[in-house]
Amino acid sequence: MSGTFDHVMIRVEDLEESLDWYTTHLNYEEKGRWEADTFTNVYIGPEELHDEGAMLELTYNHGDNSYELGNAWGHIAVRVPEDELQSSYDQLMEEGVEDYRDPESCGNRYAFVKDPDGHEIEIVKRDQGAKWSIDHTMIRVEDVDEAIGFWTRKFEYEHTGRWESDTFANYFMKPEGASEHAMAIELTYNYDGRTYDLGDAWGHLAVRADDLHDYWETLETRETEQYRTPADCDDLYAFTKDPEGHEIEVLERDWSDESLFPA
Image (cartoon, rainbow, N blue to C red; front, side, top):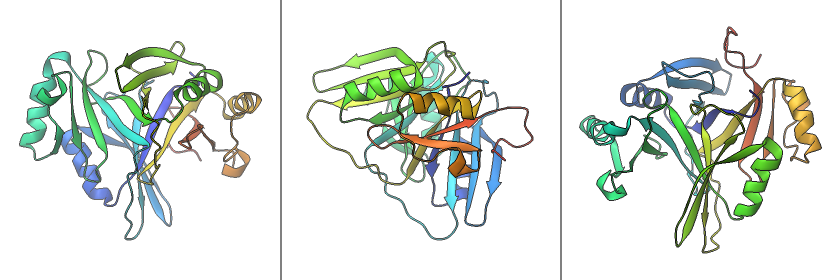
């Protein structure tokens, strides 16, 4: 199905440390790897990954690199069963994971930890999907009307939930007809008019297309920013940006391919 999220890319300073962290604590497994001269990309995710589920892409640039998290990207959220929030959190604490916000401080509705590079990971209670599968990715936006319009018009997303408080609002969106297993995007809007820094520790969101060129033509018709066209990327994938500058990759996905990386 075109438009569903395929993966979230983050940059890591120590690939082996990050792989060990995700495979040990979230029971992720390596799904695919691409070795280039200057960087390595690794797809990881739960063993039981739904065909509309999203993966995490770890990007390691060879050499001694450090990254700034910024604050325009918020977190990824992973699922645990409704009755396992506290026990899952306790297990992570016993394993030495860095605590950020415990369940009690979050009204026993969710909790937060951090990975070795400081990326925030929310733990949310869900009865669908494999344990630790990615539920949503949160980004912060300065103009929520523009952001909602972008995802609605360009990618045919719809609201799947919202939370509005006195100081901020969260809007969850997915493609029309997407499975409950599919990852959502959470748009966070703070009412105080603050601005955000993208940093470089977060890379991009990626959406799937049944046909890259047909889908890109549709995005062109809808006046989506042409950041890197298919022709710029050897007709393997393409990139656009949302109004806030978050990068969005577009690629085809065939789970039966020998490699998950376009070639």
